[in-house]
Image (tube, one colour):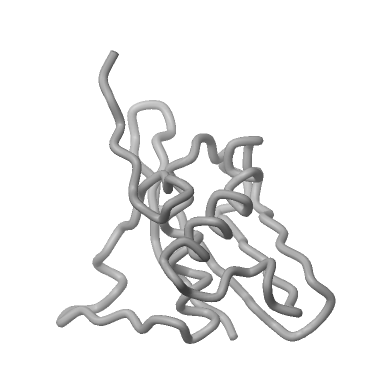
Length: 127
C-alpha cells in the first residue's frame, strides 16, 4: 500500500514542503530511502524500525516486504534526522497499523522529528 505525509526542509532562507511517500508491498525484505537523502536520513531505517518495535507495533525488518521511502522533490538535498517521524508515520499508514485521524485534511499537517530508539520524539537542545 502507498501512503503520503508531508514534512519540510530549509533551502537557504526558504522553507520547502517535502513529500514523504512510503510504499510497502509483499516481496523480498528491503527498506530503501531515495530522494537525495544524506547519511543521517539513510540511517533512519534503523531508528524507525526499533522505535516502532519499542511501541509494540510491527517494524519493517520483521515483515517479508519491500519498503520504499521517496523524499520529494528528488533534486533537493535532505539532511538530518528530522525525517524519522514522517518516515515512521508513513510506514505505519502504508501497512495499515494506524490511521490518520484529523478533522481537517491531512494535507494541512507537516511532520518533523527525530525518534529515539524507545519510540519517543527526541527534543532538540540548544547549545
